[in-house]
Amino acid sequence: MTSSSTLGNFELTAVSDGIYQLDGGAFFGVVPKTLWEKKAKADANNHIPAGLNSVIVRTGDHIVLIETGIGNKMPDRLVKIYGQPAKLLDNLSAAGFSPEDFDIVINTHLHFDHCGWNTIRHGDNFIATFPKAKYYVQEGEWQHGRRQLERDAISYMSPNYDPLIASGQMQLLHGDQEIVPGISVKIFPGHTRHMQAVIIRSAGETACYISDLIPTTAHLDLTWVMAFDLFPLETIESRKEFYSHAIPEKWLTMFTHDPNVPWAYVEKDERGRMVARATHVAADASSARPSEKLGKIAKKN
Ligand SMILES: [Zn+2]
Image (cartoon, rainbow, N blue to C red; front, side, top):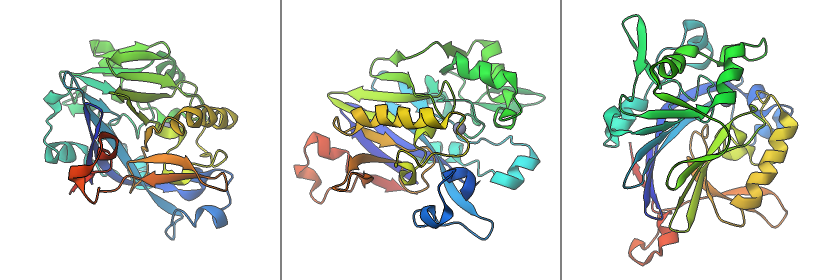
């Protein structure tokens, strides 16, 4: 699935590394299955299909890739659990992009399902998949991965980032900052301490790649927090902070792991529940105002 849209003067393209499997209990934490199975159908093994959505932003001056999926170098024991679809490069190509096109790659954090295509195997070494790009992640996230703690060491695979730090291609950030004009990162703690969202602004419109703070449209409720999150109370506070801007300011919200909806607007319904309003193909595209152009989703693949 590839979706395209505009945001002000920028072009957005959602591309996927494919679908992988997550355990439903891990995905929805303390939420009972009787509630979450109304929103996400599990198979006989309690697996739920999860997306691996990356977003390309063309600003005119830069071509930016947000997140790089699960990649193609997972160890067998993890492939057995999660699968390894490895479709990102094919889908980039189908969308008209080659790895050399990108000058910026941003990882929201360094879990293996977010930075897997940062590098590819080259003999006994690992080299940048995107040879001309500068990569960005928070230094605190990298330091946490290096500690290899009992709880989450399995989530951090150093070949995805250490070779890039050694070569100088990956820059370690210290807090919120602008990467290039119109594209900035902001830390939303909860899933990890230093997970950063990517905020995209152009000509009065805003989009936010919110990553694992809200992994899918089934996770919009403040308390539907993944069991993976290290700091669930902070996830709830960070979601409140996010919604306090995203809802009144009509930010287009981008969901990393939603298998069907790469982006949508979050709204509060009349009962105060968070709902996702998907963007739709405009019935009459010629009369669409700029803000409505977001609704013109071209579907390929
Ligand atoms: Zn994660």
